[in-house]
Image (tube, rainbow, N blue to C red; front, top):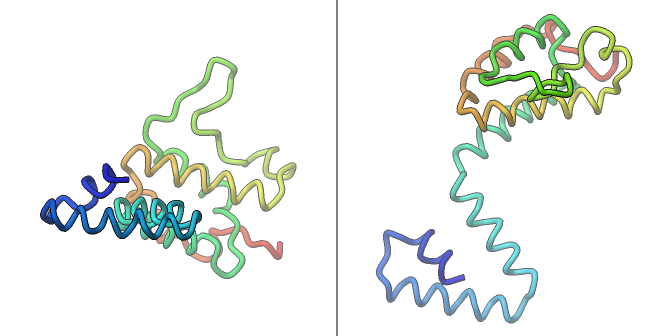
Length: 148
């Protein structure tokens, strides 16, 4: 835990770090779930801006019952993803959008999860902004909705 205090609190003195460490150690002894909560909080601080952007985009993609872009728009989104590649087994990394015959044989939940995979891939490849701009620019009729 001291390591975390050193990493997260690099702009404070060693004395302040030690005080934080002692307080956290005491708290964790009182509540065993506290260590998990503290870790999650610190992790969120490290990626606060990115997490906020991802969360905001995922929330937008689910607003008003949205599931995913319509097939032709989803294909365009996939083409924007950098570093896509064909696997030796014939699949793709990240997995291809659920379009063509897969569109009719996949549930709304599967489509939502696949779109989430594409957004996460964009984050990993450093292209979240490009993907977000594309998704935010889609018209309402470019989206598939849960009530269809």
